[in-house]
Length: 285
Length: 308
Image 1: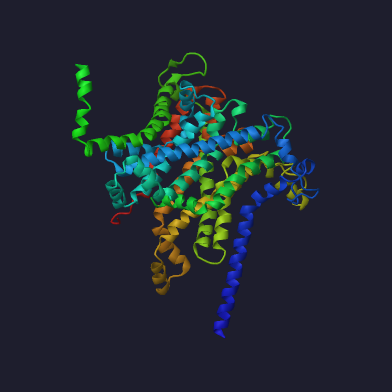
Image 2: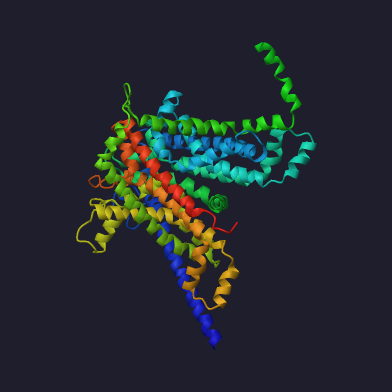
């Protein structure tokens, strides 16, 4: 009797818990789903309040077409964003794998000092040094170029990704290297053939953070990219939303926000455990 | 003489193969990273300090003016207003984030069916950018084409469509709601790692001793999570002090310039008015505040005494 009652109350507790969980999930997911669905409304309908969120007068991709007619269109800023993000991934991976390996496996003068200096840049907000960065880029001829933006983004990634890669290399047992060295492998082949396959989870993590960081960054792109043909998606969309291209078309805003969100969401869902791993590594430190 | 030195030099390292050569190779590996940090971080940092002592327009010559920029800041009421607003925002949003993230962390930390789904959906807004989230909410908050005002009107809650972004209070709380939605999942994961590091036998022992859930939370969970809490606090405070995107995109500093944050004011001075020297001096102040806060928070993060 008592057992049945306790099972009953546990069941009720379970239902209450799952109801809470479901309501909270809906609250967190709703704005995203709402936007993605509303973007598929025909242009006329997209101007009205999104009640209900799904298209009622027919499914359409008109908003994406409209978005493409503003300024330099949708493709150019999307390409710029993709180029900047991919390049940031490539270069931050190369630079931090080399540096992580160097800091983990070699002894050289000023090693600890250099490591501390690189890590401590995380304490200095880049927002406060944007003006000089702007002047430095002008000096080296990278003013208003996507390459210049990539350099800044890679630098911003370095403290986190070098920290991650050094830990990843530290975790590889030295015996593996000694065995390879007996077989006559030099430093670089050792790194490429022996070490890389062992530290790839760390590489995926830093690549993911680099991509999301570059894809979503706003202030530096706003300040450094003054030429409209160099705008990344967030800058182009903000220009559109501020009415720079005439009356604000909210349908186009929904379409643009969808284009900005979907790559992040897909990458996160595919690589979730690497993302959480990165957060944990940062948190446990 | 120089030629002799040059020709005889290569002979030297050969003796030291092993230690000496390996050393310099290590330096080569870290060189690209060091070069980037020097060019795009250390030099700009030095330049900020240098520029703050100058009258530095975008075009034309700059001139040394000593501490004049800093004296001007003392009388710049709009900067102090921006700083005060940034402080208010930081305190309110941090409390709000923790008030949402802590219950969520406790909720997802216990394994049950669907935990993975809940965790993922709470976390989803954290992976989209602040700019995307701000654009999204600027639409939801729009008085005519958005969601909240028309929905409240349709439900009969308001007599006419209420513009949430026209006055300070509703605009401020709308931003708080948006930021909590965007950031709570992130803070939740950080807090969850802290919760998971608490040994379960400790909780069980306390339960056997008759401690209720609230007593256990206060006596075990909170003290053992001090470092994690401090970390989540650092991330939230530092992020909020540097807030810019949401105030620029959703409110453009309005209504009536009441939501200009510190970074926003620096942005205006440097890149709208092009007073680069003055902007640099403002940056130095912001930098000093953040470094002081980080140092204080690192002290909070220190390992407890007697524990390794």
